[in-house]
Image (cartoon, rainbow, N blue to C red):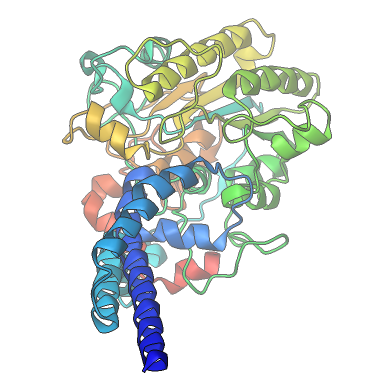
Length: 473
């Protein structure tokens, strides 16, 4: 009898532990799916697929502690609350939580799209003849992390009650900046362009970045968009010296593969700068190093590039305004309630210092400068709590020293994919038909795809299964 009692107790204990484990896992999974869209600002399931396929070295691990507090802990509490349920009921809870989680990350709509084929790329993807200018302009391309028009004041076309970007706002007003209305506006973000690598690819190739589940994992030497001609490819062919500089590990998100395979850029990141002794080997701040250092390193590198007889293409990406809370360096002023607002304001200060330095350089007048956001912000909680939910969020853009003037600068509808031919036009390149990839030269009066069609229609079509697109990848 005693043995039977012990066995019964053991079985009950084992069942209890198993129920707690299953229910904890189930609720943690469900809560995590909702939390991830808020914390990471996920734009689509395509973004998840992409990041499964590319290297994640150098990622900021800060999110792990947030996940443990907001997902794992509540999941465990639910596990204890429902510890009394039989194993079969626990498994049912797991099934329901899985379905809920998959709905949260838009998995089912993604699967549905894979069963619907489209000829959109076949019809509208363009490989036009590009004619190089006689005089090659230098090019400085500044990607400001998550910089969107929302941060401009309401008076200037944004949705901010506080002046977070006084310098960039004035610079934009004094320069060419395309907009969907008469004030400061910008580019739409479509599926496949809503994160850093996707935004960079869109603005330099005219294509969204959408990997299928069958796509190869992007390791070293694995072709990355091998059949796509990009901005880097064109400028390399025309003899530009090319540099890509960022304050993190370029391997993360496939950025190293893209800039290496399309333009063979000199990649200046945390890895290379430490190897060169420019950055201390044990140094680490936020994703790698802060923008205060990035802009100073950029000045030094651009000064070196300017000594060559060849034109240069200098691409840089800031990081301090990265979600969820940004990074506040020792030079960042605490002027606003939200930490990310302070980071945005400090980025404006860094940009002002950098631009004022550029203006004093001999090569300044021969340099086209493009300032843009890589995508709209992923800081979902900050955006939700600080700005209006019905504001039309767009990606910031500023063009300085363009070789051509726009036919129509305002009241345009466009996406970040349109920046590709637009940048080339600003550099003086002639584009037959004013179209490249899925992008349109905004300096021309040619209609963009989102001016020709409803933007939701375009977004839906580029998500669908395309044999033509898969061949490009």
